Length: 274
Image (cartoon, rainbow, N blue to C red; front, side, top):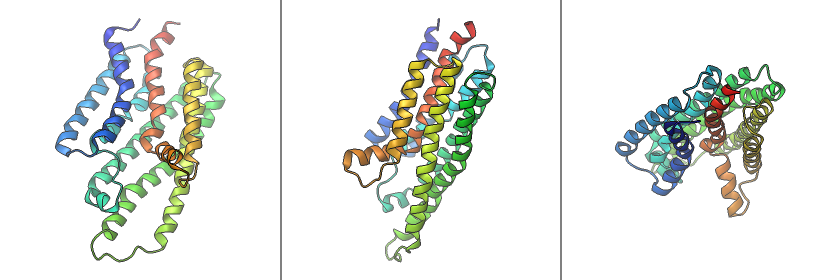
């Protein structure tokens, strides 16, 4: 039986990514003197909520859940930053913020991968081992591609926008389109691997009894949906084009791992009592 503080922590952790996403798209970009204090406060509250929810004896599951959950904590800064600027000029004007944005995503993606590698270790002696191996392989391949893609967006593209959006700037060279096409392929691969790896781990957790079948099926469904939408061409009509764009937003691709971490931490007491 969870205490009131544990129930409140659980609800808060579930609400964080949805509140962050809503605030980012509703309020857009805010001044850093506004969003930085809110960011620090939210990280502190998330830390306290995870600590409260994880007051159990099973150290192994805590070691898995902490990086899966707290890797999303830095992403909450996007509630104040808003989505990336839609124009090269807007991007160049906030160049340092875009570099910070993608550095944060590198940290978050690395933290999520660490969580899943720890999850593989936890499942090594259970019936979900075979699937955990597949999930681990997918994340090991996806992480360097993810980091490369974040470096491309955060630093290469930022420098391109700063250089070529200035008045009197020269025309962009043709080779930039070739680089863009190459990193579109990188994005297609790494996002698909993250979604599929997450789905495989969700199934492995169900096989080992750490997740209910219903929760596992829900996670697998959304992972499969995200992977399919990510592979759609961007030239499709508006509803599908928007869905395609949303599917490969890095914070969205890391959302299901975060929810798995929250679920593991919330259900761990039940497992330790069995």
